[in-house]
Length: 416
Image (tube, rainbow, N blue to C red; front, side, top):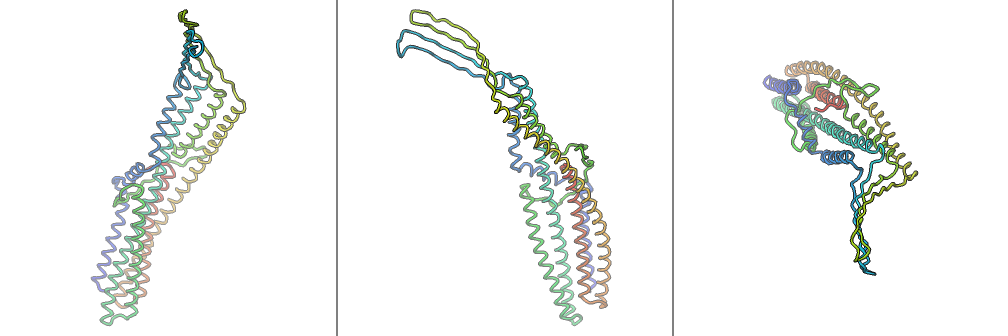
């Protein structure tokens, strides 16, 4: 091979490796976290997050109602009785009644606990939904990183194939190589070009996926995360910091228990205390007289209705408790699996480095042998393909390790 062409190829390889190495170095140097900023953008665009503010306002209004002096607003009624339409002797009666519902024993405390648990559940849902948005963006983020890596490798292969084709065609025209060698070089260029076109389409799709979530194009540098320092969740569900999914499930269980308590304390409708004021006269000759009275209204309780409400609330509470236990187990197993996957990715990355070193040495020797005429083009292309595969595998493992770190943080409930 022409020494000038060979030097150019090595220069392209060195520059490409430098770019790939900079991918990890930039993250290690602690540059600004584009992933954290992208999660904030995705959160602002998430349709479910837009409704949480209204849900929180609803929960706070329920707290205000539970803290009130009465379970429901009072009522005012006004009545009039007259004989104007029959005898018309001047009989008039005006009645004013102010009625106020009363709390049942234990009902106010149960309602306050229910309102507090409802607010806690809304706040926990906010954290859990944000984690879900972060997980979706993390997957799209590293899919884009893999697509960019594949596009870079495809571009390298195409540039190298074109340079090799140019050298082979030159030597074919002067009679140093055969027509078969020229066809092989052209075939390699066509295959590299097809791979580049496919990589370009995959990259466009990955970029659009990130932009759909964040509303803006992804940054040029896709930074890595650091592994979380949290320990795994044990069998009891305890952890160094509460997992958002575990927190929202526990909040839902507390809320269900609070609703069951409200159902137990609300075995009848609220009693009602009323103040009555009556002003009346019997005919035109008499003056008005006034009277004041108190009325207490106590509704009866329906046993079947109470059992239905209590059974429904208790069933919901039992289901929430079971869901809490299942969530604890699922989070622990997901975290363990994510840690094992990260360890596997790190081992694969170490082996990829060794494989790349061996293939690079083989390629250097094959290029020298081909330039001296001691090896044919088919052997060089085979060794070059192995070198490209090793380089591509190394780059994929870099991305896979970064994605495994993000999945571990996701499993532990840690946002970027």
